Length: 396
Figure 1: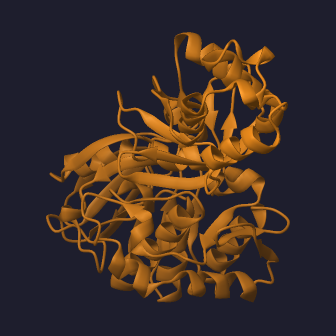
Figure 2: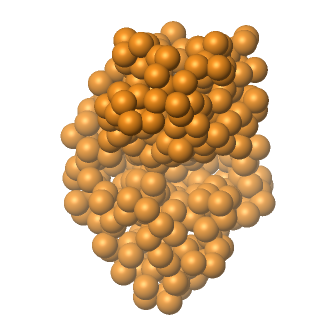
C-alpha cells in the first residue's frame, strides 16, 4: 500500500470541498481532495436545472436554518456573495439574475465546476476521484485509508455533504465520522423537497398536475410567497420547497391562492354589478381554469347553475375564505430522493464559527452541508458552501 504525506486532506469534491482546497492551495499548502465519485462537483452540475444558482444577491443569516441561528454570520461575513461573484466574473462566466436575487449561469453549471477545477489546478491541488474512504484514524495527526492508498496529515476537512439525492453518491459518512470523533450530530431530514399527500386528496391534486399558481404558503409562523406547482405526487414549486424546511409531520399548511387580492370584496362587487355572471366564470379570470373549476366542483358542487345574484353574501365569504386560507395536510415529503439539501447535521456547538475547526479534535474541520446549517432555496446553500470553506481554509 502506497503511503502519502500532505498538509491537508479534504474529504469530498463538491462545492465546499473544492472551494476549501483551492483557497488552502493558494496559501501554499499541499492539499489532496479525496472524492468517492467518478467526477467532481456532481451536485453543482445538476443544480438550477443545469445552470447552477451559485449565490444570491441578498445573502444574509436570516435566510438560514440552524439550531444556532447566529452561527453562520461569521463565515458569511468573511467571504460574501460579492467575493464569489468577483471570482465568477474574473473567469468570464456570464450570469444573470433570475428572480429574488438568484444568480444563474447563462450557459451551464459546468462553467462553475470548470472554474473551481482551474483554480485547484493553479493552486497545485491533488484531486483523487473514485477514492472511497475505508477508514479514518487519529494517530499523530490523521490517517485516511482509501482506494489510492494511505494519506497522513495534521489537518482533515469533512466536506462530505448531506443525505440529499443519494443517486449522486450522498451518504451519512460525514455524520458517522463526526460521531467517531465524539461530536454530536443533530437529527437530519429532507429539506427543500416536494410535499406528498394521500388518499382522495392525492388523487385530487394529481389531476391538476402541471398547473402552476403564485401563492403564499404558511406553516406555523413561516410563510413564503412564490409559485406553487401541482404534481402527480402532490405539491412542489419554490413556495412549497421553501416551506418544507419548516413543515413538521402532521402539521397543516395553509395556502393563499390569491395573495394581495381581496377576492371577498371582488365577489360582492360582482354580485352587485354582474348579477347574471357565474362564479366559475369570475374565478377563472383570477386562477388557472382547471384549479378554479376543481375547487368549486369539490366544495360547492351545486355552483353550476347558480348566478352571482343567487349566492348569499355569507356563501361568497366562505368562498373567499377558501381561496385565501386553503388548508391542506401533507402526508409526507418526497424524502432525500428529490430533496435539494439536508436539514440538521453536525451540531454547530461542536465547531468554531470563525474557523470551522472542531472544539474537540484539533486539526479537524467541518464545512458545507454536513453542518447543521441549511439555507433557503435560491443560491443560499451554495454561498454557505463557499463561505464556510474559505473560513476553514484561511485557518488551516
